[in-house]
Amino acid sequence: MEECIALGEANIQPLIASLPKAQHHSCHVGAEDENILDDRTVIKEAYFYFKMFQGLLVDLIFSSHVCDNSVRFFSSRTAKDAFRVIEAELNFFYDLLCTKAAIVHCPLGYIYRAISVGCIVAAFASFIVLNKHGFYEYDIQITYTLFLGAVGLEFAILGTIFCSDWTIAKIRTYEKHHRSLFQGSIFIELLLKFKSESSPFTLHILSARWSKSVSQYNLIDSRLRRWPKWIEKLIDARQRQWPRLIEEPLSLIPLRELFDDLKFGRVEPYNDKLGELIFDELKRKASMAGDLQSIIGMCAARGKWALEHTKIGEVCEILLPAVRDVDYNESLLLWHIATELCYNTDTNIDESTNHHRETSRVLSDYMLYLMIKQPWMMSMVAGIGQIRFRDTCAEADRFFDEKLFDENKTNKYACQCLLSVPTEVKPADVKGDKSKSALFDACILAKELGKFGETK
Image (cartoon, rainbow, N blue to C red; front, side, top):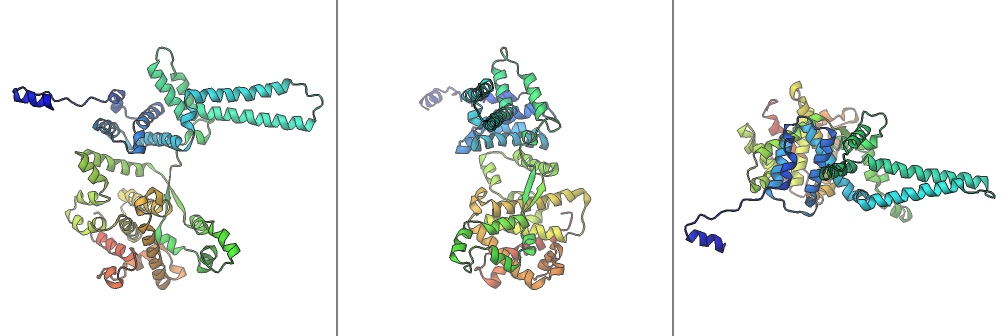
């Protein structure tokens, strides 16, 4: 600063140091020109970004160059290729946090594995040539079985290590720094062919990085198909009707969660349409992100940003309170129920946009699944969100028990009954704020959405 001020006083234009270019920029020269990424490039890019963004686990602050590099790479990719890279990258993160892959795939780990295999094979060979005179035949057979099992297990582990993404990424790194000493391209090609899903020799566990499924939980569907009251009392260990010797062991077993998962749990297969919708929205937001503050505001908007950037101006003022003036957990419940109401009462279905309709419901049910079944993934809604969900379920149960009979307990009819309830007055003005239910507030939101017509 003193030097800068001195230069200014001497009427000399001070030289402003430019930010140094990040070294990782050169790694992706020409990557944007590729239309479809091959498996080798996918693993290379995934490992590169995995190493780059490990600091996210400890809230490390990154430079603008790191962000620009990531945005530039992914904005030039298709949704399918982008998700392939993310799949492999998250696979690296999972292995780092939940397995011993980081130890196994290091020089010391390779040495220990070689010693382990060598010792077992040597012990097996020694037993084969050993004079077994005086041994019981039964004991010899058992020993052979144990040795064969141990050797088979070791070679199975070796096969898993060799076919791991870590091995391919390590070979690529070694090949880059020692190109004149080692060429691993042929070995990588063989591994990739063995790992490919089309190979008849591969195991599914070697080729699949995730289940390609989306867990679902639907509030209205779960209340319509809920257990009879006598079964609920039976599986609820908190009921004080049990003798103490039976109640205390049962309280340690989450019977209700177990039975609810069996009855209401649903899984939808992941499809490329879902990935394209998410990825296109991310790219649209990234293209409009100017500075850090705009990015922070965009990430915290939770629906507000989408409503403010819609082409229909009147939507903003009417629907914004459902995301701006409520807590996150309440907003999630409101839009989940409203989505289900609109989905089941929509009569004019356009085939060209039907996949958006289906995708909206899949995402809606997935968000409620996270809130109810995986609350630690959404810590901000773990407390009041559970209370609000229970109150909403209780109000739905009372309504359905009064209005519906067994022969008409369908999602469509239930949604029609909910929308037929007069909602000129807000529920809180009628019943007060003792109940945290969001059921009929969601009905108001669904009616507002219905006013804009099918195309909007």
